[in-house]
Image (cartoon, rainbow, N blue to C red):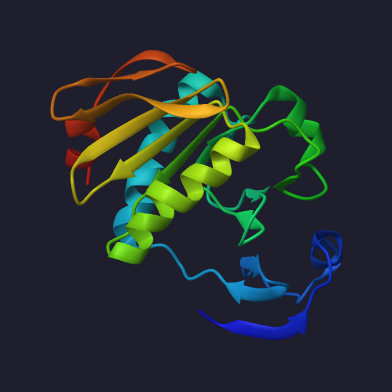
Length: 190
């Protein structure tokens, strides 16, 4: 990860920054850290889920990796692999693809776990806490190394596990209902 030297005093100052590139950055302790590209495997899983969810959700409410969420803690922003936004977000995101703390949270966030202990802890612990704090009603952790999909639902401000889907278990989502999709189909599609 590349770290830039400019120090930002606020999230608003960061939002007004433009380095004239398409790079994505996390704001960590006032400094920008470039987000490395996703692995091809993770992109394939996210693209497969995008294709499956597209006819259910529609193109306007389904967002890929470029959607930025302002969160509390460090870093101050996250880029989920896949997000289902609310109808009200469609207009709000036309100027900048960032959901701010002052806005309603997205309905569902999906993260695909990258290989490595640091990445695993980031998705299972750090992001889980930040998305819970943000009030995201549902969070999926898609884990290719374990071939599992953990679905979490926000209940009384705390994530509870709906289930860990594996094999031929049909994925059940509080936001989407029963899908005709199994964990095995997600991982076999690659």
